[in-house]
Image (cartoon, rainbow, N blue to C red):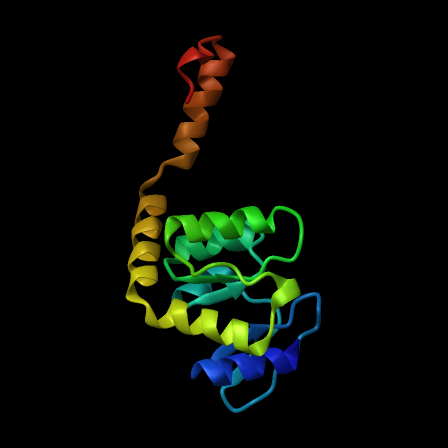
Length: 154
């Protein structure tokens, strides 16, 4: 995986930050930095795109950051979130982990980084998320449930 990441970034003509994660990825080259735990809300807004497994939390962090995504789903609901990212227009089609090669990943990275449509859509989605009052909506919904007036909950 480490070698694949370095090769894909090199082929895509981009630098990269690789989070080692549970797989212990340790990509080393002059234009790839491997890090351990890092706050996604700090890192993602500083990137041109985020390559990730498309778990719900990482997907949400990427959308809040307003950057294009390159989803590489492995299992579970990750294919669903990958499809949502593509449907929202913030990513090229997913590269399922089972079909992940340095060429398929490089192609997806190039598309995400160089097609301005993905960045525009990502920024638009991030703006919408930032404008939401999720806590307020939850409190209103909870209040309606507590008072038995749930027919208007959407």
